[in-house]
Length: 370
Ligand code: GMT
Image (tube, rainbow, N blue to C red; front, side, top):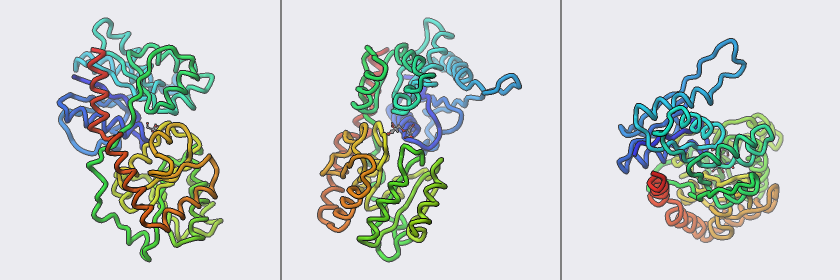
């Protein structure tokens, strides 16, 4: 099959899944055509069956906002005709599925089928905004298939949009053959005295509650020596840096910025902290589990479908910093329990979310449509 994958190239779970899906499909003999405005950061290796089609948007003085959706639709129509696309797989309803719909209208009867994958923010934030609600609903209705990355997201979408169409749950995935036995991740560099290492990785948006990460860490450090590694960039970063200073933690907190190969860094961590206010899936939690790292987070959205509370991590109500810190200390002080949690998380990543299990589900969906 020839499949166009439309995604955001920036750091974020949806871009990771789209890139890994393209590589996985290529390994299975298909040709994946990534259509985006830049090369996705996680497109980690060259594969002749993964082709890039960059969307360029012309700017004219008349346009206050460059119309990316139209540029993308034109590019999709062009790629569909030239490459004889079978499927356009849009990651995000708005704007990607809308562009796919326009491309289908431009092409006519021979147009590829449209698969739309919902990743969360399209439903919980963008779609919930009055100005995008109708177009989000429309994009889902005109897609030939819609998938959601968790059962929670499926439920929430149906409620939010009173949607009557079928939505398939296809979970996010991780390549469990990578990352779990990282030989040297620089642990001594970050924690020279053998301190425990806590980690958080996100795009530092308010929804991630990175200040809760710092507050949990502050309480943990009062119980045992530890360091905190913060991976990512985003709007809250300055505020978080300020908080670190106020709590006199600067010496113990390292800001690593955006990192392409998270699994190498996760190999250093004893715990991952993910105290988000909302998370349709929480891909970084799965990546941590795959690397034998237990997760302390919040019982929100699809996270309880990924992390089993009391088995591979602990999930508290949003904002329960003290509770999260207590659980973190409990695990860090008990190597036996930590090991049991690490093994359970890894086993769950392998049995329920491995790329080799999930990618065939997308393949089967494409085949069903064709
Ligand atoms: O969480 C973000 O801000 C980024 C966003 C994205 O586009 O990557 O994440 C969403 O999609 C991920 C991949 O499916 C999920 O793992 C995240 O949980 C989801 N974020 C939210 O629901 C807030």
